[in-house]
Length: 354
Image (cartoon, rainbow, N blue to C red):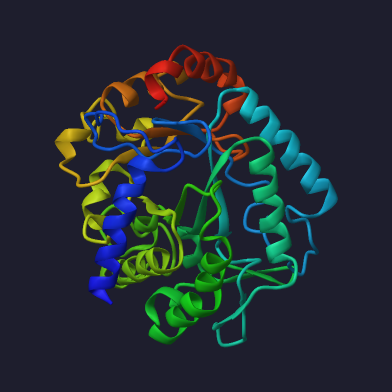
């Protein structure tokens, strides 16, 4: 299995340079060969974290009912959102898929994954249709660190309480065999998906320095095993890249032996003193390209333009603003969208591979 995965990783490494832009060759940036988004020749992945219409139930039905992407009102809103994002120069959209598993996948009473409800694939199909219509490229985020929050019942819907899916070998296997594998087999060749993000900020769900943001934090070894197996599954059943949204540049070293095709870290102003944004990608000594998967659009000392300029000139492979619909203190993409559109237009020649 290891040799098979190694061969697939080599092939995917070649695809990083070639896919989605006519497969022409060009000199690599300081950060290494750049991943690209099909159809627009994107050599620098500038985009936005959507990151959800409804956190955790954009895909699948819950006891609250169904308001996932295929529900008419949600379909209309997502269509409008994607049209707007495209008009502002966005190329890549990072979107949370399972989140804390409140809607999908489904579980039995013992906490074992049993599959998806009948709405799940309809919702994912609707999301892909919207992306394809507006020539946007998706980075679905499989899981969020909140899955290891203490389990709570909210009107018949369990939020959190899924840490054993990471730590229990049988439950982990059920997730891979019954949820992730079928998902990848169904969508693993869709060109509008540029990468699968295994987990958003997994360090928050790990019992480690700087982590333990949740009640049921797991051992780092358990999380790394889960990530390694998830990446192997992606490499086996999909042609797209595998990435992971590390919580900071200082935590990237946790994932350098996991077979990722695209490294990713998140940046917020509170990190500046220890992990400054103005830092060359080459000095991280990574073997694959790296993007800044989140940076603030609100309450930051840098403007949107300054964030993009700093990230681009330091040789990173992309930058995804946080966020369009996150609703937190770091999110206000609409307030800076005009600056994003201007930057995208001004840098089109430098960021696009022909």
